Image 1: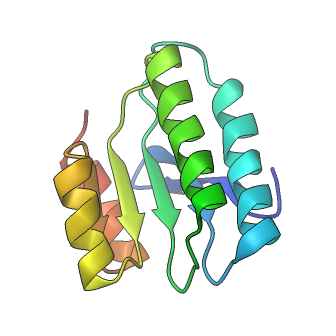
Image 2: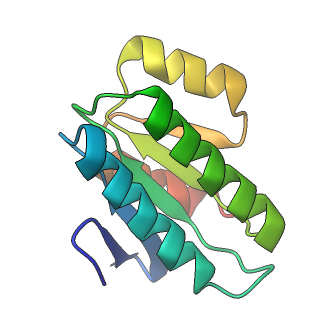
Length: 121
């Protein structure tokens, strides 16, 4: 699909996987653009579970703005989750959980996959 975004299958569940691990600056923004392009291809109102790996990334105002673009597109298209973030620091995980109640934070990709199959939307 792309360099940073792919569909993975786990226990019969198709999951949109965005791997931003280790990215910073323009590379991070480019990866988010790939996610936006993938989301545009999903039919409106669809259940589209997703996992985003942010381990070792560096956030900036530009990457935060890209994140808001994803959030706005998901809402506009009325896409349903579940959505899981992997690799967040303890502080970032707490902030994500407080600000985005519909996003689950997992420590590993395996844990994220299990959470998705056990918590369908």
